[in-house]
Length: 170
Length: 170
Image 1: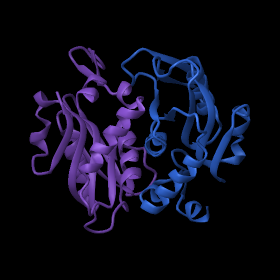
Image 2 (image 1 turned 180 degrees about the horizontal axis):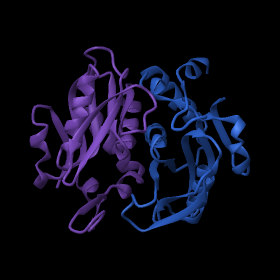
Image 3 (image 1 turned 180 degrees about the vertical axis):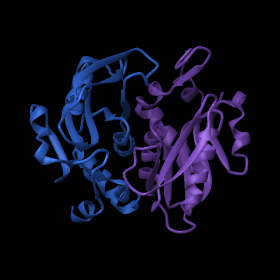
């Protein structure tokens, strides 16, 4: 894991003062590290999983790769207003204000078993909202995968009823 | 190709009146169709390709999968202000106003051979701008891949000096 850890660049005060931004671009541009990351994720995809659900937009990079690797379908969760079809929405609170995410309403068969993936687990607000829309759309969240978990922000507590795997904890 | 074509949903007047939006979500959620799509793309990735470059955000789904499939690195092109690192930017005209895209400045070794991918080729403005930032960052665009090409919009003319492959032409 150290080689993956070393490839994540920490940038202070982005997107605003006081925030340490974790930049994953050096990791994903390296063919060996990207491939290793997807292999690690694939080992944690339960056998009956039929779809990978990913959160816009960095989650799409890992989710697309993981769906390809595990021969599953791909379902996007997007910010409000981007999906043209009938959707299921969930609005959640942010530090300042609120945000709404959407999933295509016809994404799943009833009780399909799916895996949710995103690049970073921070406060857990988006991941928790993502689980809500997945469940409202009829599927079961069998696992949640993150490349990086920011431990101090305690996001894991917000999604504690799910099975979570993070490759790197910071 | 017909089964891929049939899985693309056309939605009128989205995001604005007069636009026919091509919704790819039914295609990518189907494990067989998604897998077939990535296999078709992979056949068109030249042998010396070391990185797949994809355009935010639907391009990330296909780009991540293709990088995984072809054992290459992944480089994101993002809308202005999303990348925390030193970037190379390009501003281009839209029907109304303009847009700016960015790529991490340190994405490539000199003269690396890369493939650009996006979901839809419309007017070609974004793809053309993407080629500019890739070349300014030191790489060579060996191929451009699209799932859907909207022929009437003549995007191909704007990037005619490149080798282009579209799975579906509408």
